[in-house]
Length: 189
Image (cartoon, rainbow, N blue to C red; front, side, top):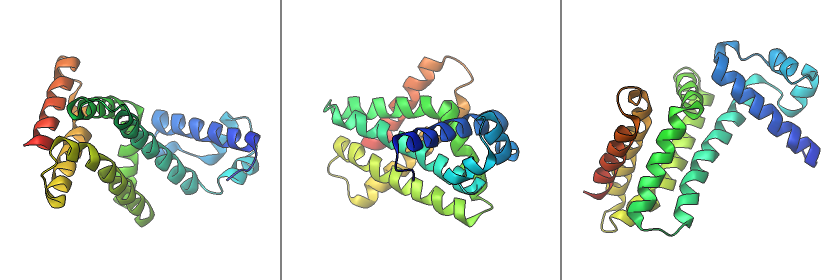
C-alpha cells in the first residue's frame, strides 16, 4: 500500500480504470499491459502498485465488496425504523448489482469456480456480507435464533443476488418494490 497521498491517488485511479476495463471487456481481455497503456503509465509502474493481474483483481473485488458493506452501514446509521432501513438496503443493493457491481461480482463468482484463491475471497466476502445483514434482519425480528437469522440472511441474499437478472422484464419500479416486499417477508416471518 502506498504511503503518500499521490501514491494512494494513483492506486485509486488504477483500481477505477481496472473496474471499468473489467466491466466493459471481461476478464479474458483484462491485460495488465493494456491497462497500463490506458492509464498512460509504464507496465513497471503499474506493477509497483499491483505486482500481478490476480493481485489487482483481488483488490478490485475487495473494494467492490467494501462498497456494499458501506451501503448497509450507511442505512443502519440513519436510525430509521427497521423496516425502512431494511427496504433501503435491499433497494440500493439490487440497483448496485443490476449495474456494474453485478458484473464485478459475477466475474468473481465465475473465477471462484475454478481457482481456490478466488473461491476463498468469494467465501470471505459473503461471510462479511452475511454478518453485515445480520443486524438489520435481527432488528426486524429480535426473537429469532442465530441459526434462523443466518438462514434468513442467506435467503434474502439469494433473492437480492438473483433479482438483477430478472429486472429487465416489465416495470422496474414495481419489480423492485416486489423484491423489497418479498425480502422483508423472508426476514420477518
